[in-house]
Amino acid sequence: MISLIYSSQGLIFYQSPFYFQRMATLLAQCFDKNVKLRITGILGLSNGRFMQVLEGPTHSVEDMFAAICRDPRHFDVRLISTRSIAERRFGSWSMAFVGPPVNIEPVFDMIDPKMTVAHEDIVTRLASYIRC
Image 1 (cartoon, rainbow, N blue to C red):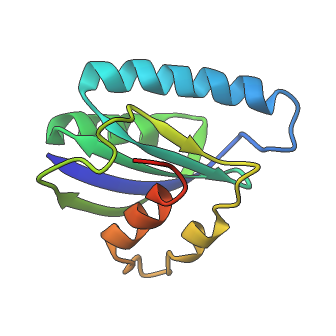
Image 2: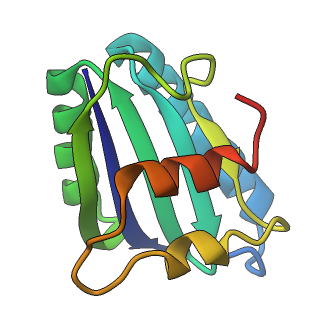
């Protein structure tokens, strides 16, 4: 089992019309796919930028990330970290979400240009916004 963290630029902004409708649709799609693939995790959104932690069977997480990389709704997709895990951090969440009006910019600020940020630091920071 692995945990993978990526960031991307998306086309959903808090100030845009239909923000809540678009996010509800996106999260419903994520939920359905993740349940089928036994993936859990958390999706964060701030100023059109996404950060997501995906955890689950290696092949499922890798296939999901490959699909995200091909998805035209995402650009500037960056793999931040991947690591093997013994147990899930977001096991009770097929897809937790944290975004506006909650400010998660501090999580994005943790990523340096060389992508040397510690995997667990990002997971812990994102988890702090929800109850795991």
